[in-house]
Length: 355
Image (cartoon, rainbow, N blue to C red; front, top):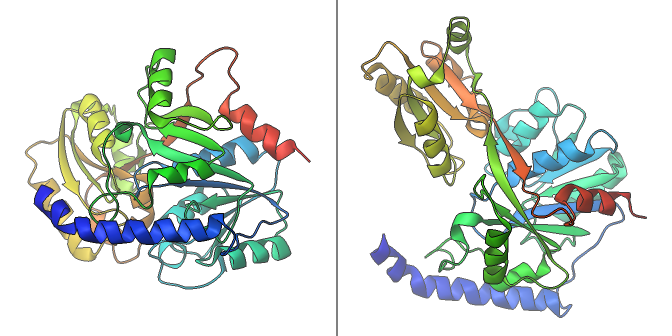
């Protein structure tokens, strides 16, 4: 892996130069960013995947949905359609993407929209839906749109470490791009967090005086049944700690999930797939075979909530009906660093309620 990264460094330098020039053209006004009348909140990052954009979008939905009419706009990564689409009861992940499908499945009263052209997407949303707030999913590098509130997510595990540009590393743009953020959220931080650690991280990031930094962490919820076999298992006295767990996931960073399940279950067997992996029937056959080879009468399969969206494919679901498959929901929670510190929720609500 190290050798491959070294070999790719010339390409990383070229990619970094292109992104630097592109950002400069936006900064000086040669390329124009368009701002819209509807309040907009962007959630993005400067790395490839793994910072938790989708659960943070869900956090914002839960925070705002009761009092405001919301719409989400995503590009619909790896969907098999093009253009502007509004999710409906018949939508599938293949049409709108797994993450928008997850929003649509969980929040019936939120309008979920996909469009690779964010300007066109916002214009159609304003014309057809007229929400109070548009939540822009993964829009940090899409500078043709200027969000009114720009939230940058940074993975706690990467703070202070050397990172390289694509394709040698994970950076989408140079770290100097963080200056465009109004708020910075350090994601996947430890549950036990101290003011001293907050100051240490802030010292490494060196935020602008106008930028507030917040710390979030993952709160794993109880596993939920994906199929009837799993539902039947829950009818008995079910305790995860007594079961061997086969976990599979197509997410960018699976380590936190594995670490959590190692604490909660008897044994963990891992099957890794690439981020946003398009599962095929052969994958389900292999997972079933791997499950059957586990020597135990108490064994289950666990995947992520995002992966479960893709498993609803009519080609895949029947192939898993003979084994108990669960998915593990997560929620985002924020640390309150000090009694006098303004909270993340307050910051968001003050912006949305402002004129």
